[in-house]
Length: 459
Image 1 (cartoon, rainbow, N blue to C red):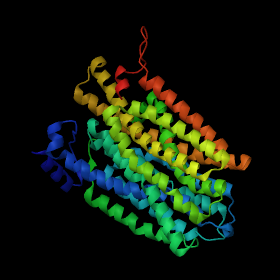
Image 2: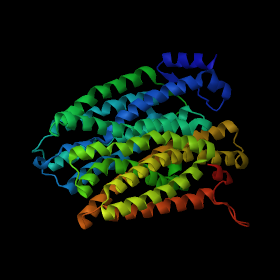
Image 3: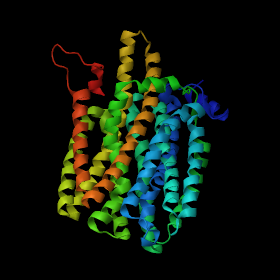
Image 4: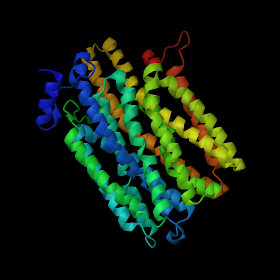
């Protein structure tokens, strides 16, 4: 039976594909590629909407004028809350893909976005208590979970040689949900004024339904992706899980944290009005999202660790520019530096995520030599471990967005400026490029052995 025929028959019987071997060129070209690409397209759609809802309060705060009685510190807390919840739900969302199936969970996770959207529409008016706003903002963290389940699912569909591009495209298409909702908010503020936040929410309600229906009609479940809590426990004990989490805090944590805080920084650091801030906030997230697949593609060609190292060097340089611009309050220089930070954060998102399956593929090759695994067993182990690691690393990385918003809040409270926060970001990027060099790029000296597989230099 041909690959395409097998795929069609399995999809007709409960939307489950029973056999999946993308590393086999004949399987891939015989129909596997078509199935994988179709699932990628509709995964991107659902994740895109998830990111928009996750970043909902980064635009809702632009509608919260003096009548809402929420000060700048309170607004930073509002945009930080979704990042915290989004980080926590990423691990169960990762497990859910294997437990319920990628297609099935995509439908459920899309429909769950109705909850934060409808509740926000209900409470978004002056007179609502701050506690209520915080609780509703927490619900939007569900959108952050969509990323982890989507990436884990797509990781299983594609062969190693195409994972960087596929994961980068999947994540980049999702990330772009941030600037899209910011552009929609800009349009609403421009044409309807800053007193109509429910218009934004009304636009997203039908989009959520469309994403869920498309997932139900066009996506598939992979039967080989079994619920495996053992893999999750094993990945927790793996040191590279935590090393890569640090790097992902630096790349994705920066992207999502800056995306949520950009508008508030412009208002508090440079005195921009909500409309003026909205005219600028989408630029950085848009460019960072569009370049993420490029980061994955470059990692496929040159190695994720090399791209990640130089990317963090560039982020440190951009953070230096932003720190200077913040200290002298130069808006043009600040915008150039901050948007550059967004671009390299997006590029680094793609390269760091390519490193995750690469690390476990390198370790799988070691298993062939040391444990006697067959190539098929090693490949299955690699997919199992990298899928679990993606969920954990994505969860920890999202915490970076929380840390960035808390750093901004404290910086403006104590120094009335974002400069101290930017100094701390510069130091963090220095740690990240040093870590990448020491663990994944530096060759062992004579007489010393590398703690990890020598193949990691090619990750």
